[in-house]
Length: 79
Image 1 (tube, rainbow, N blue to C red):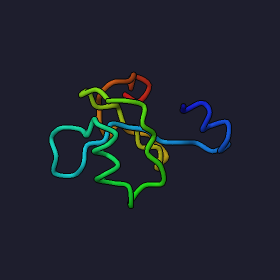
Image 2: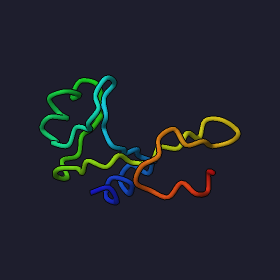
Image 3: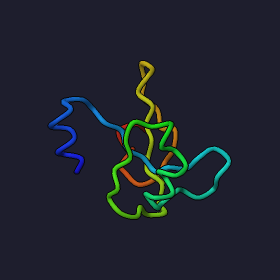
């Protein structure tokens, strides 16, 4: 799904574990994601249920990238 989107859009896309402000657990059901966010995001791809483990998030806005959330994914380049 993601590869087809990348090829058609010719633009980067973003995907991460969806933990909403004030929540401890991520949203995992694509139906729940749509019900909660459909008016706030451009697209929700229903690829099935997601796992509980959060993704690693790296901020690339500054001169030096930094780890905003450590989770699944290798962040050793940013230590």
